[in-house]
Each structure stands twice: as C-alpha cells, then as structure tokens.
Image (cartoon, rainbow, N blue to C red; front, side, top):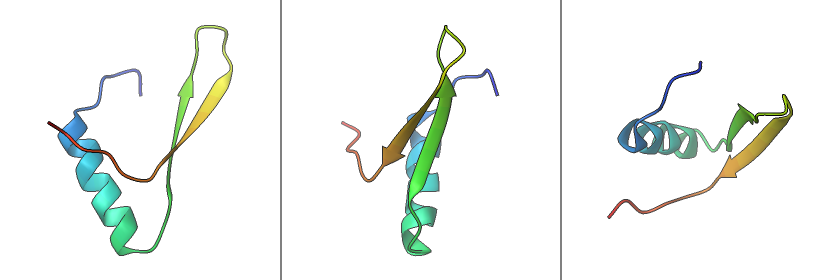
Length: 46
C-alpha cells in the first residue's frame, strides 16, 4: 500500500495466478481519489 512494486515480484504473482487459472486484477487510486482497475494478462521484461 502506497509503495512501489518490483516488476519481478509482479511477474511472480502473475505466474501464480495463471497456474491457478485466475485473472490478476490490480487496483490503484489516482490523484483524484478514483480507483482504477488494471487486468494483467502477460508482459515481457527486457
């Protein structure tokens, strides 16, 4: 909460979700206090 997250940690969480056949949904609050949801399916770290 209120702290940055490492991409490697996010990738590990995504792998766990995929192995459980679940969808990863991230929620973040913007500067106006609105909650924005992000659905994560896959990403590549280069």
